[in-house]
Image: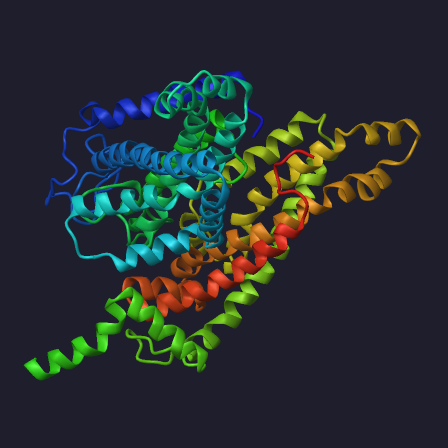
Amino acid sequence: MKSTRPAQLFAIVFLTFVGISALVPRLWTPDSYETQLREALDAPPSARFPLGTEALGRDRMARLLYGTRVSLALAPAAALLSCLVAALVGGLAGLAGGWTERTVLASVDLFMSLPWLFLLLTVRAMLPLNVSPLVSLGITFGLLGLLSWPASARVVRAAIHALRDSDFILQARASGVTPWRLISRQLIPNVMPVLLAQFWIAVPVFILAEATLGMLGLGVSEPLPSWGSMLRELEGGNLRAQPWIAAPAVLLAAVVGCFQLIFPREDYSI
Amino acid sequence: MSQETLTALRANRAAENSIRAGFVHYLKGAMRGDLGESTSRNAPIADLLTQNAPATLRRLGIGLAGAWLGGLGMAILVARFRQSWLLESAVSMTAGTLLSLPAAVLAYFCLTAGIAVETVLILVLVPRVFRFSRNLLVQAYGSSHIDMARARGISETRILFGHVLRSAAPQMAALVAASLSMAVGAIIPIEAICDAAGLGRLAWQAAMSRDLPLLVNLTMLIAMVTTAAMAIAELAPLRPGESS
């Protein structure tokens, strides 16, 4: 999308607002995400519960805000993990060259030939499904980070490859600079912008992937909320009678849309 | 459960629990045309695949055709009338909104509205096809030979079909293969949420019931299809997004 400066500014302000609300949910609701209010089961929106309560009597707004915290904190963590693996693999391929580079590239191509969501589903199914909420959180975002490095590794490899043959690196080598110093002082600072771009592109992708996994019942488990686990309510609910149950979908779309405005990309993962 | 039953069950699952042994066992069976048996459905996997594949293939065919018609049509409009910010903004905003929603949520909304499953796949793929192809077409329209063609008074229709689409064709071919991979990825949540019989729902059910033999077979099948598609894409001189 061709974004203008005001649109990007709006997106940054909106993301900051969502981030602060997620960090300090008490600004909006006094309840915790797991507090069950038995006198208010499936209550419609009111001043006390702006988004109503769900079937177990938990405040939907509180769950949405805590879920936002989980999704917005862990998607960047998974993106960081993905970038680290990509930097290691891509860096190794780019620096080593020869058969190492060809082997790494072949493995990356093989990895990328499988639809990402399918791979995620298969690997997630091989791991225990009946685990504690915190473990499910770790597994979900850990897998996202560990399975999505190939595309970034290709980009890093290309960047390292270009740098390897550049004049200043050749000059540094000729001056007797040690390999470690060359990597830490010359290569890493120059590849950092590429990695940073990959990081910011990965964040919304992971937010969407977690939401899909959550809707399929393979994401973060109850009672811990995340956008994915909250979206499962759509399946059991009646959207026409209770349109407010779509609030997590609306917030997710708004946040991912803002990321698109700030970091435009052709393809956001399914 | 008696000790004998447990021992027999463990012996049966031993090959599946070891990745190497399971894979060798799988390959030996596959050479004989035996893909094994689904542990959750107690049915031959080959039968499950043949029963479910036609519906998914039909959906993928309709979805890809619709997405290409819609996505490429919108891209041509936007690239052709790129001075019109209103058109560009409206189409880009629609594409951006569709890209911001997971396929599973789109599937749920369409299910609630009574929209066909194939339409969900089209809605998932259209913005992706649109964005890639718009970039390619805008890039092609920016070439100096297009300015030269205009200066010589060649009609816009002829420029579009004779020059712009022609120069973007190799990258478009690569994008067709890439869109197949996207469609295969999207079909899982769509079929699962819409409860539509097909390979996507089968994969989801296999994941939920940890039916590893079925998952391994589905993985192999999908890997073969997408690798073949990507290999065809490699034949194109340039990938989408790369400059000429």
